[in-house]
Length: 414
Image (tube, rainbow, N blue to C red; front, side, top):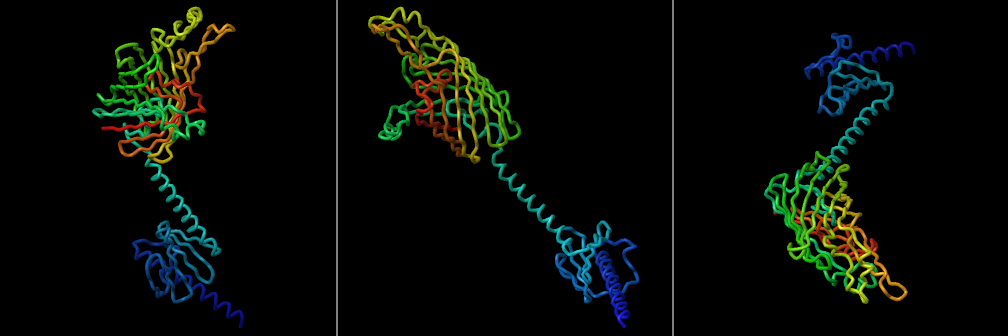
C-alpha cells in the first residue's frame, strides 16, 4: 500500500512539472519568444494560470509558483514541492536551483551592483561642479601675492584690488586693542587688466606705498597666455613682462620678466610656480645706506657695503577647493640677489659705524577665497604690503612668518 502511495505521489509530481513547463511555453509564446523544443512537451495538459503584473508571482491551481525575475527580463523562477527551476526564455536555458537560498543570491548581487552604480553616478555629478571653461578658472589672478596664469578673455576688463594693514596680529596682547590691526595704517593698491585677444593682455598696477627706494609705484606690463587651463587641460602657462617706475612712473625704473605656471591635481588641488627676474631692482643703489645719515659720516663702511642690483624670485603656491566656490590659499616666495628689507648699522667699541647688515624676510601668506559670480573675495594673512612684481617677494615690514598682517584681495570682471 505504501509503495502505491509513493508511486502515485511521483506521478503527480511529474505531471505538475510538465504542466509548469507547458505554462512557461504558453507565456513565452505570448511574449513573442519560445523555449527549446527539448524542454517543452507539446502534448502537456493545459493549466489555468492567473497572470497579474510581470513583477508579481503567478500561482497555478496546483502547488506551483512562477516568479518573474524583475531584475532580469525574460527570466522565470519556478517552484514546485520545494524544488526550484530557473528558466531564461531569452537564452533558452533551464537551470536547476538546489536550494531556496541560491535564488536570493542573484537579485542580492544585482541590487548591490545597482546601488554601487547609483553612488558612482552621484559622485560624478558632485564632481562636475568643479569643471570650468577657459577664463573661468576658480582661482584669482593672484593667490595672496604670487600671480597665476588665469586667462584674460578677449575684450574683458578685470579689476583687482589689494588691501594690506600694517600691524601684525601677533602678539594678540597688542593687536587686540587695535582690532587685530584694523586700526593701523593700510596700503590699498589696484590693478586693471584688459584682454586684447584671447591670448594677449595688458595690465597696469599702482601701489601708494611710499618708503625709501619705492614710492607711489606704477607698473605697466603685458602677458601672453600660451596654454589655458580648463576642465580637460590640467596645465597652464603664461609669460609676462613689465616696467615699474616710482613717482607715478617718472623715475627709478626697474624691469621684470616672469613665467606663471599652474598644474591641477584631481579636480580640487592647483599648484603654482612663478619664477621671475627683476632687473635694476636696486637701480642707482637707492636702497644702499648713505654715509651722511650717520654722525660722524660712515663713509668707509658705506663704501665697503653694497647690496646687489638685480634679483630673482621663485613664487610657489597652492589653491585647494573646499567647495566649488570656496578655496584655501597659500604662497611662499624665496629670492636671490637683491632682497628688500632693512639695512641696520653695526657699531664698534667707540660707537662709530663699522659695517651694515641687511635684514630681510621672503614673502609668505595664506588665506581663504570666496567666489560669487564674476566676483572673488579673499581674506589674506601675509607679512608684506608690497604687491608690484619686483616687490611682492619681500616683506617690506621685515616681519617673520610668525608675525602676519590681515589683508584683502578683491577681483571683479566686467
